Amino acid sequence: MTAASPSAEKRSILIIDDEQAHTGLLFELLSDRYEIFTANDGETGIRLALHHVPDLVLLDVRLPKQSGLAVCSSLRGSEETRDIPIIIMTGHDNQEARTMAYRMGADDYVSKPFALDEVLARIESKIRRLDEKQAPRQQVTLGNLTIDRARMEASVNGATLMLSALEFKLLEYFVENREQILSRDRILEDIWKNAVVTPRTVDTHVSFLRKKLAGSTYAIRTLYGAGYILEPREGSSASDDSEDDS
Image (cartoon, rainbow, N blue to C red; front, side, top):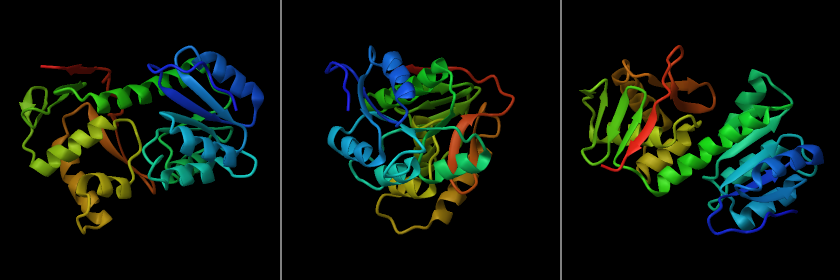
């Protein structure tokens, strides 16, 4: 186990990987920006995650003692770690492996050998989402989609969308967690809280919301067996991602 010099201002990252070469590269890349903890097997990784509750986990699939997918499932099943962004790292770059990772609760997926700048960009994206959740702004713009929390309104190209209070809450939730896989169970727990509803309720409301976002450069996509994700529409140049205090 290794840690960078602690800093109250630094976000923390737990790297769980038994390949020392990868761990060393990642430590060198990240330790000046983040507090880093490392583990070289699944059991130690879970123990460190529960003890330190890092802001993000970089998780290899092939690990001694417990596989990365088992670790991912375990972290998602714990109240203390269920919301930590998890980026899976693996040498298996195929749809089946990706789908399995998402089903176990992964937020993102990178293939080995990976480009360090890509990994850094993915990490920074997840950390930025955490910062936004802690200090939510009144207005968020994604491409041509804008949500205004103060007015509980959303618009596409300046045209106000006719949304119910629940639809606005669901859209706001997708925007806060954009480009992350959201399972039906997680959406139910976060949006409907203790209400007695079924996963089909999520499908129905997402379907209605998706139709109302037809003209948006961001769309809600279904990932079979994993859930939903809000991401730039295919072929779109949606790169705007801004927030306003006003």
